[in-house]
Image 1 (spheres, rainbow, N blue to C red):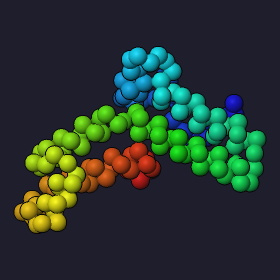
Image 2: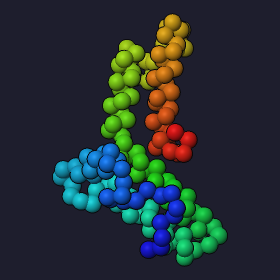
Image 3: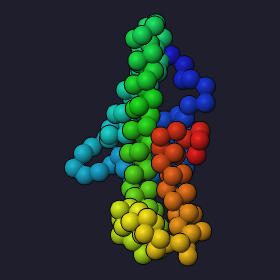
Image 4: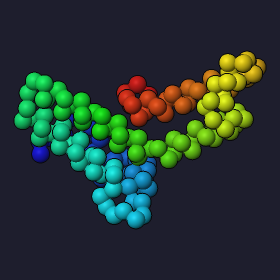
Length: 139
């Protein structure tokens, strides 16, 4: 495989401890053995970023890069899904809602107008989580 593109996170020991713990918690789910979904997606992404991109040009190379970026999103989502879902549920509960639909209805009806700063902070945190998955450079 070719060299990893500059700025890419490394698999395994070179990753930050928190990311390694999150990855371990989501990749070792009974009854499945290693490699888990995260490691499999990472392997395919690295193959596309390295061997396929280096051996192709034009349209195929472009599509290999698009596919690798899509897999990077899947990787990040798998690694953080449980934590982000729990954080999001906690933010909604703190506002007194069980779902995004309930929060949206309350915002539309004006029921949250007196708590605008609190609601805006919760929505910003949710958007930051979404960006951390979709495009970490913007988070």
